[in-house]
Length: 211
Ligand code: IMP
Ligand code: MG
Image (cartoon, rainbow, N blue to C red; front, side, top):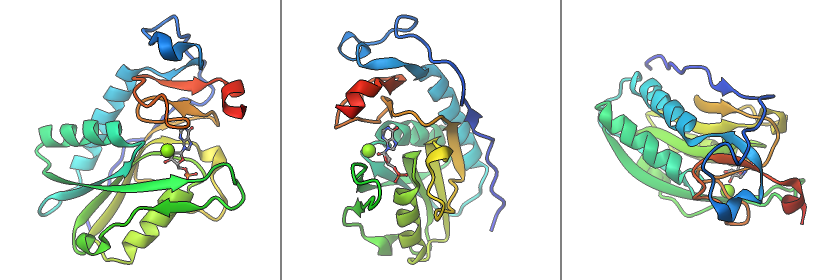
């Protein structure tokens, strides 16, 4: 197996938020935000770099790039477009996950039906928006490993390490940003289905989250 290289994630823990009046932020969302954690331009630059990191891993044939719906949609499209520009051929697949954060203790993760046989002998990349407790990626990666991919890598745009469950050992191979324990929205991430198309990543006001 080739050596895997990945540049260190950008650690923005402790960095002050940018005010909603310091960037162009849509009127419909701005009152719900504590502030902006990561402007879209910074995300774009980091995603390009993750693509470059991924492309240093030589593969035979096409990469099977799997989008974890729905949160990773934008990250997935930007990343794969960048991989194409780097001469790295990719095929697309999707896998839907839902987790129930209301029940913190049980934390059930439900995965959509997926034809796991297709990953046998393939070079696979799982593309996820954020790793929080780690339950979702842990479940996905262990299921995939049972089906003998040729290689299996995980790219995750955000990592909230302070929230990780002790029994989860998995660490994504490529991480965009390490962040504090704040609930983020935008860049594909939602709260109750909203805010996904906010292009910056912002922090939701606590009072909205607890309502
Ligand atoms: P985990 O299974 O606890 O690692 O959670 C992963 C999933 O929870 C992600 O795919 C997201 O859908 C969701 N999630 C976790 N933290 C956040 C957040 O700060 N904002 C939005 N969604 C989140
Ligand atoms: Mg989600």
